Length: 195
Image (tube, rainbow, N blue to C red; front, side, top):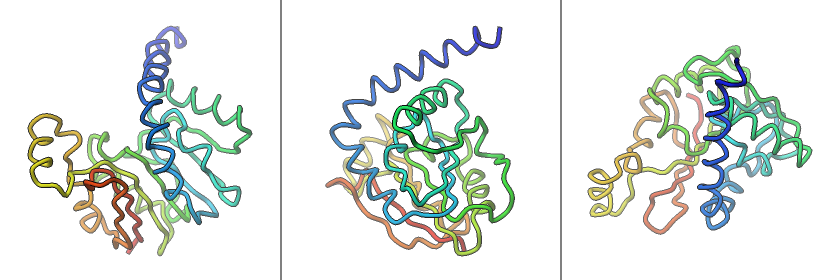
């Protein structure tokens, strides 16, 4: 019965990968590399999805990946096994992480904060599980710097016009850097320190 209920999740994850593959080849892989540069120690990846970041995990990192979708995690497990990546993958809601305070040196997420029901609560959990002075890194699509494009996206595709960067100081993070990864500032890499 449990497997029967999970079939739509597995199909959905496969469709997601198929739809995202051209974007990953064109841009995503180039964006993911700087996300993981210099990371070592105990690392939590939130919203691991189907495992697009797994090929970029540094050898010096001990990564735990979490996601709410069982179908996504099943694909991530196959990807990790295929390339021999050592990662622990857990099905969990990032609004309630099952880890102790200060357990991780880094928390990493890519294109996840735009999709969670309460990004401030999720960031609160991220802050809780980071050790004091620990670093969080987020690769996110946000409202672009181009004001006209920003207004158009607010009307036509508000999912791509969120002001995620404004949440970080509110959630107790110092923004160490914010880097545009495209010409319009739609995709940005944020490096944050727990304050």
